[in-house]
Image (cartoon, rainbow, N blue to C red; front, side):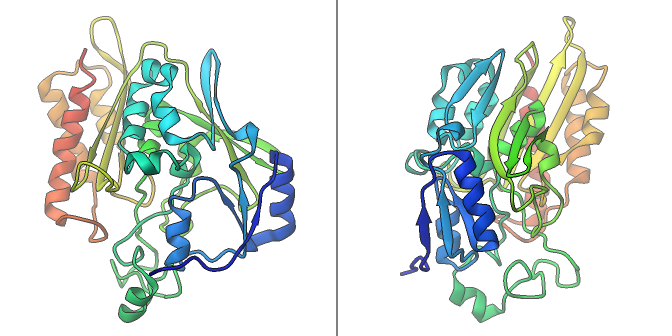
Length: 325
């Protein structure tokens, strides 16, 4: 049985108190929200914080606020986000993506902020301590080599969140707070293409809110590829977003891929093909082909490389088809 390492548990009552305790404790402390990713990682000794600062009882981090657009507190429970009437009505792709995460039990524990900050994953990393010790550690934790690409100087662990591709596609923003103040950035700028250093968020910053853009006529869709119909992380997640004219011509578009890189990949080649054209079958196939050509899946998750690459083409075509009125 894998057991949690020992830690101190702190329960602040507001954001300022949480930030103050984190600043005092430094790198020894980590924030705890739902714990559905952190606790398994601690059991596998991926992270071993001496202090956990719980965000469960911080009211500023909870709730869905409606003020023209919608803002979601980072500690809002996943099942509450997916069930919220405004989210389901105006952001159905996000509701669908969140509803596809893991299982009902874990969606009743996990948070939208935790899913947005999900640790990158890899076959060689997401194993218990004894397994990793037996094959030698990887560079993401305790080692010096990426076993997916031993000659590479970087880690290739993948970004496996379901909510992130949709949030990037629709142009969501996030608010980050620290003792020095707060800043609001596009959520796309929160990620970098590195399996270890995968967030641009500073260690002293806390994700406070996720801001959704006004639902003013655009359409979005999300599809997920995984071995089982529940529980599994996405081997591939495809989010598509488009604004269509009255004649059905694509005026703006974004296609975002998750599960095939260390950050959410925005398929610029597909966007260029879509702009100024109608979502006809030939156009959809051309955009899907462009995504497949640019996808570079590696041997770091489920299924074979060739099949995963082909499924990029299939899943992008299906997701773009969901945008057709």
